[in-house]
Length: 364
Image 1: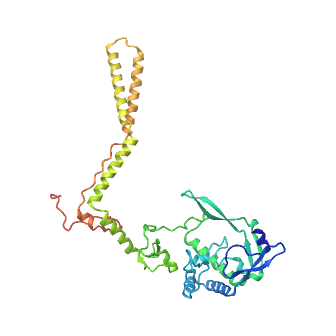
Image 2 (image 1 turned 180 degrees about the vertical axis):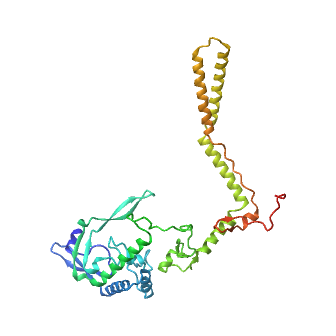
Image 3 (image 1 turned 45 degrees about the vertical axis):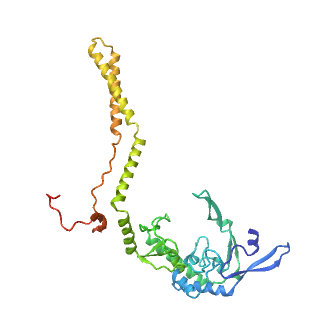
């Protein structure tokens, strides 16, 4: 492949605006080919660059192309991209890797081969995931082919200048520093990744103040969007009506008590051994103390032994005192009024609803 790229042959996959042209067999009997410009697609590439240079957004350009019925470069008869819908990532891509219609240098007559490589990284499923890695520039194969130029230098420079401005505005907005990941991730809503579309099955994503399916961006889902307030109210209402019931809370308390008791037995099961050792040390110390009191000429070794036993008693008492006591789950009295309709206070915290008439101190 490197030799073919050096000779100017067609390498890699399909590129929007170009077609593979077979020239025949060369002197060594190998099939010779090259890239040639496809005028219909070249006009589409010029239109995309002109729209972006005229301050049209990526999503706006995709809407224009989809409305005109132009299929995307990755449209297939079968498979994931059979819808042929344009996506903003097909235009923006990755500037460092030359991905995306707005970043491919071949449109200005510069072909680059061996820019990247694929490596396999083990994943959690005992398999491998293929990811891209950028090769050093010294390993790139760069060829200037003016006959393949589609975009003039002026629109190319305007597009690159606008991309640089967009990246600078993004970095300023999210307070990016030397670390490219610092501040780039916005706080996600608490329902993110937990809600899916009932029509297409894709996850719902938060766009502004509304939630919609991921497939809605490429017009592959007919389900409408929902406001954040409505979605959160429905989710909280389900938790409130189905989980905050007397039966479920009581069962939860029983299981939690069993789990805490099991942890206490497994972690602090030595309480009985420590208490038995403490009782034995106290008995031996009492015997030695009675012997010292009864005998006037008791050996001094008994006094030293008594001090050792007293030290052992203190150590065992501290060890027993450090062991936590048994935790007993005691739930407050819960009524149906408290469970049925909680309401948010001024701080956004859910509190049980108060009864209509406050009870007197004597009644409480």
